[in-house]
Image: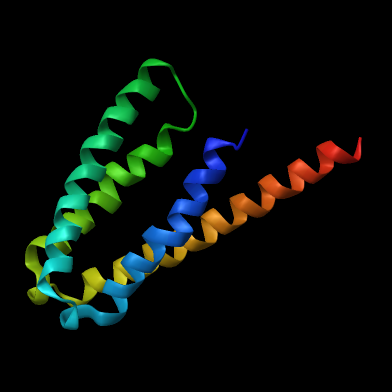
Length: 124
């Protein structure tokens, strides 16, 4: 059975990072429909991770920080850029770039760590 964390990491590397990276690189040249998609995805991310945060708070999970980062940083930035579209200030695009590269590094690191752990368990 494939670990759900592995699937989440691969999803972010294959879909989320390229999507956000495209917007970061294109900036005001981004098509209007992409801004609309970003806006609604931002709303989805906000609602989904707010719900997950509440569930993790109730269960006293130590991984609540991941959801809170999505609620307080990532989703608001997605909504902001989606709403202002071509009028988005440069600083917001720069923040999007930072988040995009952070996501790439974070999820690649997690995949490598999961693969190393998987290999170690087979060596025994």
